Amino acid sequence: MEINHYEFEYGEYGETTGVTINLRGFDILRFNNISKGTAFSIEERIRLKLSGYLPSGSKPWKNR
Image 1 (cartoon, one colour):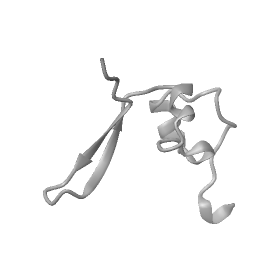
Image 2: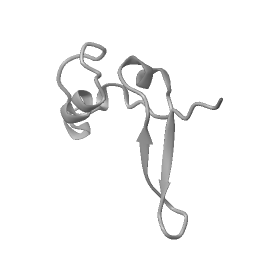
Image 3: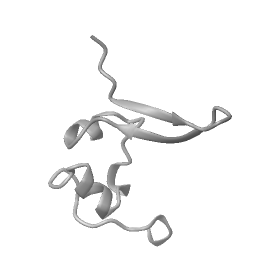
């Protein structure tokens, strides 16, 4: 049985338009190709259940 951790979404011409992540919590942080490390927004952290796995708060790249 194959487990799909994430699925790409494609547009009309085959371009990548998004990705659906089928993981939650620490499992997301284990995969470098889908993890953004500390760059997850507050909304993403809540939706993906990352609370407690990353330092609190997030800063936009321009303020780092």
